[in-house]
Image (cartoon, rainbow over all chains, first blue to last red; front, side, top):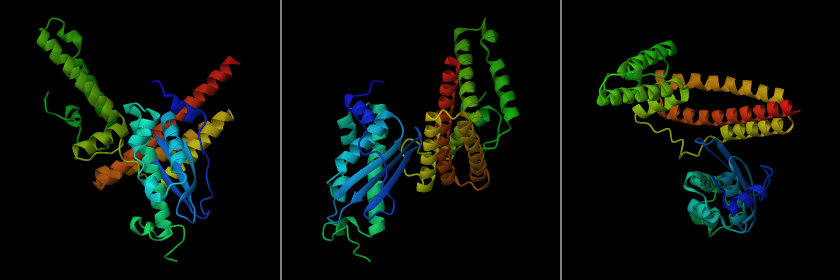
Length: 143
Length: 180
């Protein structure tokens, strides 16, 4: 199967590979896995005091499409609010990378990973989607 | 032979995860010999075609039931449960973390050409896999906890993948060794 140029680019020069310290301020982690292909994906976000994602990192064990999908998502989410980042759809990822139908699950995995990271952030910080816009999510309103 | 029989029934086995492996082998050999093309050499076209269809069914049933993960998946399907291997990505975080560490260890051992390390990893993996199969047997046959069964099938898929990676790495090391 031929990979698109964009997939190869992300695969050969993956952006934002690595990890943040788990207990670093504003850091949240999303871990997901695809049983059918055994891919494992960890996506971390670092949220600033303004509620925007300052930085993102990933580590993926999987095929080229899975690596490219997570690499792309870490690029896309930087500078976005949690709501904006949470609205990224796998179809956008698949379209950008020109993924063939058999690799669509890789883009689903990346969408689920960013959603899981956002959910982890919200769980840690006690913010919900609705209070998000009125309160500063970077600050722990509940503490 | 009953047209509507499921794989277990076709092989004369009770519908359960725990199976008598010898009985499965015997049933398969028996079925195979009954539908073997040699026996239909002088039969009509329809009969030949039917025999072929039965042979295909017997092969599929045997392959499915012989593999523990395939057998569990099939049993769950009969009980009306979808294992969600294609769609369910929300595995427990500690399980995924462990998988990631194992994949990392395999990748490191591979790049360091550490064959004993890879072998060690494989035996650790085999132990965990056996534990998991025991849990699967309990979930399916004793507790009838099919949700737990689905989750275990999904987990076992990650083990299969890891096992493949280790095999590939060992094969590669072996080839390099021979090339030298």
